[in-house]
Length: 252
Image (tube, rainbow, N blue to C red; front, top):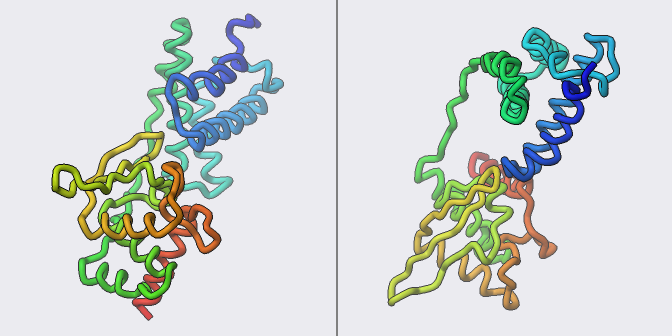
């Protein structure tokens, strides 16, 4: 077997260099792709009767991957969405191999021809304004935590931010100052994959965020905006639990 055809060096370069420095993918995506490759490599090694380090590129054939995906779904009860996430990892790896090894372009094309699975996307529910008003009214504005909760719920309503975006929000991401006699407040939100977007803030939202952060000792720019009762940054799980708690409160 030619060492130039070995799978292992390509897997290493894909995970250690390509995803990190070329694609700049989020750490969670890097780990997801790594786990998918580990699973398919074990599957291919068993099918070929080889040690994983002796597999070559062609051992990851279109037929093998087409068998691997349904096998994973039936054995683990995975959804079509999860199967598509794994296929996305294999598609990205195939593009990488074809791009940096033109001799494998035909193999790359065969892997990329594996179609994603179709599935019914659930309809995303939303709150009407009276429902949102009830959620905001459920907070206790006489307590520090109630004031934080109100500001957080209003921020989510205003920006449409994910829970993780709210949890990661830092003082430096806020622009709440008055410029030229006019209030032009906005926030820089971090999205998936490190992507950022600017979102205007309502005056009410800006006022509450300003009060929330100015009521502390002078916060450094890197301090998180939303803190828990211990003064540490709230987590995305904490944001999720907070919203669920108030939702239960207004429906009981």
